[in-house]
Image (cartoon, rainbow, N blue to C red; front, side, top):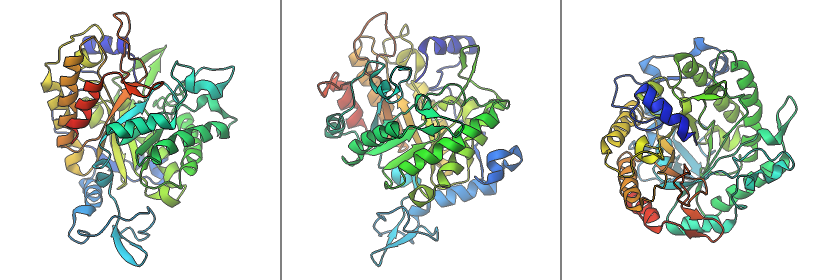
Length: 434
């Protein structure tokens, strides 16, 4: 999640139609791919813009639609196809492996457990970070409520910095235990679960000067996280980073530069290599990868170079259109459908049509005492995503009470009572995904 105040300044000063959302017609530039080898993780010389690399990714991602696998049941295990043919064997029977599109097409609509395991700052007792920003301790009943309403995906944002020690960045076992416990609440309900590296203390900044430091963290943290979740099936998804960006003198740069984009591409390759290196299910698990700030402007999307890996998906965030969805002082009436139309067209042209699945990992509209308009927005937003089989995951920070002096009022679930604060909004989200 991001700062609404700063985003407003950037949108106005830079003339963007929507910061972190909207912002784009279907430009002609298209993403290229790199191979997640050791050299790709450490050197810009491994970057490739060849169309052959892009074609290889499209072919691999689209394998489930080929006639050779039609009619087969999906494999239950991620390791049933050691030869990477797309066809596995289980109990003496052939089965087809899920592609990234198979998984994203089944994720439906989701919900973020925001301002919870991503909370930071409880120096007296870091293990109580979960409730430090005002939300209650997460329960299995919370997940049951989500599933009963029709949500199929839980995004579980996690901040790790308060729970690491030493130069090896060793993660506190108790914190990992709690993250896994919450993930299991949802997995046991049949949900997809996305686990990520969310907030951090600045080590993630994608600058040339900080690149080696950032790679050190990613290459040591991700094996620990990935190993903990290796035993779970395709319902468990990993996300390399949240909204990676550069902060200068306390001010976040939400737009980025060519340097930042290039460094981030290499950092994502490092993170993916660390995950894949743990083997087992993680060798073929779906991994979500964000561009700069997870933004969807043309510049940000065109700057993305994804690893050449058939089981990755682009992770995007868009509180769009900005003036309605995120700017608390902006319009309370939803009329700007063009920004959303342009955003989806751009995402489709640059990624989906080229064989790369996309997940809208964060979206929402802040409460301006305008429920009817928020319902209209939700219907249009989710319907637009459904057209391209993009799963959408609502950002719920637990803040649901309208106040003219507040911002980011995006809570829809009362986690204490397991009741929906705005049932009409939830109905709009769920029904529009059908």
